[in-house]
Image (cartoon, rainbow, N blue to C red; front, side, top):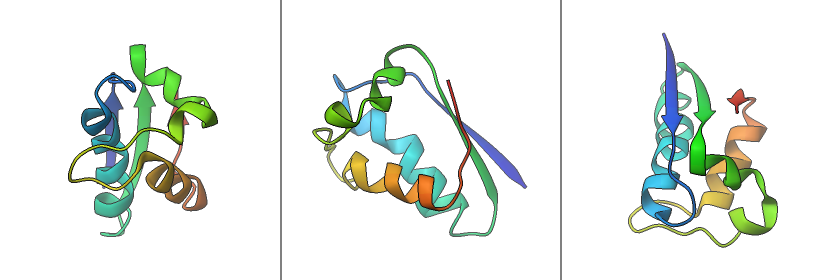
Length: 79
């Protein structure tokens, strides 16, 4: 199964911005499913490494950690 995660939240809401990344790499990929992430609207700002390093939501891993894991696992990211 392939799961598509769509995110439109940016750094102004760090928890919501991180959730799709977290679900993709710590959910779908860990369950041997394929995952893709689509960034739309405000979420596109998360491509900036300097900004991504400052995003930390509540109850989820830091965004920089899950993005690094997504890249390491080859999760396609669409903008």
